[in-house]
Image (cartoon, rainbow, N blue to C red):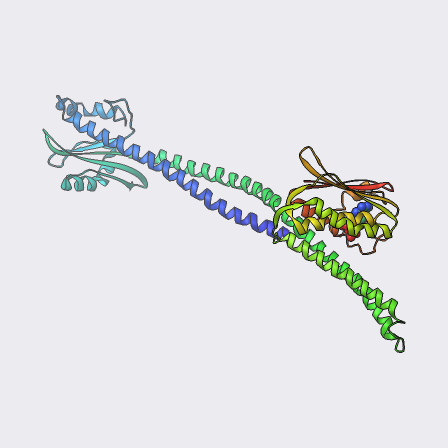
Amino acid sequence: MFKKLHIKLTAYMGVVLIIFMLFIATGIYNFTKFVFEDGTKKLMQSEAIRIYTYNDSFFPEHILKDRDVLFNLGPKLAIMGSERLEASYVIYNEKFERVHEKKSESEIADAIAALAVDSFCTKTDSYATKKVDGINYRIYTKYFDNSNGPGIVQVFQNTINEEIIWSFLKMVLFLVGSTGMLILLFISYIFTGKSLKPVKETWKRQKEFIADASHELRTPLTVIQTNLDVVLSDDEGTVEENEMWLDNAYSETRVMAKLIDQLLTLAKADTNDEKLDLSEISLTEILENICANMDIIAKNKNIDFELINKEEILIKGDYDKIRRMIVILIDNAIKYTESGKVTVKLYTEKNKKVLTVEDTGIGISKYDMDRIFDRFYRADKARHREGGTGLGLSIAKWIADIHKFSLTVDSVVDEGTKFTLRM
Ligand code: ADP
């Protein structure tokens, strides 16, 4: 499922990249072409002006006489300026006769004469491209009217070299664009994979959670069923005679109720639905209240129970949740201690409020210590099934986290465990 999603996301990214690259490449191409065309047009225009100005100069006869000399200078027209434009030109006089024309180019001049006629009639300039004998020409037609009368200068040049450059530019843009896109696609594949990782993790955890939850719910259900089966098969037995089986079934319903309550809490935690009802609360008061009840449970197990709290400590928190977290920690301490002592201590240290719950119980191994905050994790499932769901500490950790408190554990197997909550 995630592989498909990964590929799909990368493909979407690819489409966006292709559109973006096409946009950029056509932008670069058209802009370069526009700048070039515009520059060339201006250059041709200025050359046309120079030509007719020169023709109109002090010794126009000189030019007319030596026009072959002028043409023989080669296709470079800008003989009077510093710019050099590779182009040819034709001049028409007031009778619309060609007075300047390079013989070898008369065929081209004929082909573009219609443009000259247009300009002559409309007395305007024009700029156009035209195909002559399969070759594209750029033509600037300039109408002028000077002391010799009206006339036309047509400056033209073929675009063969440019076309090579344009197709080269297209190829470069295509190659650079497609290589860049492949690289970006690869990078986006990696990044999409990375961003999918937490989603994958959550999905995996959710699946495990559902599987574990169903498994955990099935166990008490089976116990209830088995016990009730025994009661039902005993047709003659009284309620008193079947009390043991009924008690078993009843205590399992309590396990189920606790489990369902914890599952609901964690489900809400996952969807971030649970809002904190923050207020200034007295930890001292909460502890005294909890410890009064816990003391009785500890006494029943012959465990010493001590609360050390020398000063009133106030914190900002959600009363019910903080209470629930402390109950989980103290309940565990008593549950996992066979003999010895459970000490609850509340004090201030370096501007931090600290609560420790310490026991002399079975302890937690280094391997288990990394996992005890995981959902459904129980260090020794066989040893302490009684009432344990493996969800208590994950709830306690979640409560600490949403309050931005730190909950840590230190433990030595068979010596004891100490949970520390820093607020
Ligand atoms: P459970 O319902 O099983 O107590 P918890 O999430 O509260 O679930 O605890 C997870 C596991 O961490 C327990 O099953 C137990 O193995 C271990 N654990 C928790 N508290 C203690 C403690 N004070 N001493 C020893 N082991 C503990």
